[in-house]
Image (tube, rainbow, N blue to C red; front, side, top):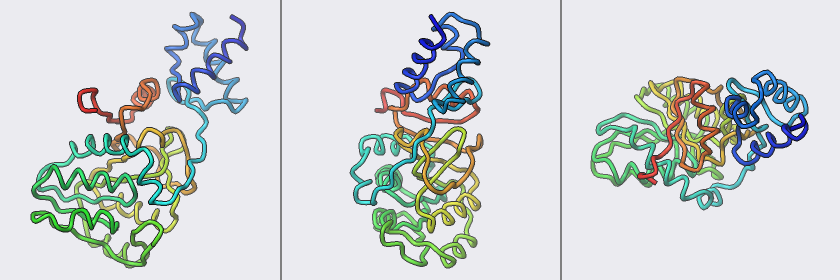
Length: 259
């Protein structure tokens, strides 16, 4: 097979799976690892992919920003699936903090169903409304300036309140996740709240449905960190998941029996 044919096939695999691994390409094409590395370098220089340790990922596209009501209807099955997986990281009696947004709503609904006693901090009106009537939940709402489009609070008052708190686990729901570029979101006002949440939490859990992987948004929240736990649905391609794991990322997806 000529180099161009091989590189065209690599691009096809990339479109199908979102990622390719060097070891798989070596076996698939029956060529040396040096040949594959040259192919990936050439494709990266052409802007077709981005090389990472162990392979390559697709160049992250900008994730489209949609209103909260619309996001509540998008990827609903995937968000429900990852929420069921995410609550497995919560224990009875935990002190946790929950982000805002559509994924946070699905997560809050699972918390309400699965647990008897929790302390939950949030700056989201939606999360607060779901949890406030649970008789054995202690719910702390961090107020401030109200962001109507996201049904959440922000600003110095919100940050000051968060500065007075400390929780064991934070569940962050960003707009985009990229192995090379990091974790992103769209609302500048809320990004400062999300960063503060990360500061006051012992453990960070990133909740993102599979459509958000290898994409970007406008504002960067954080680099990808190996100490974070990344939770998604079962639709994430096995090749992309394998590449994340090979780069030291702790990624959780539901088992088939859980889907």
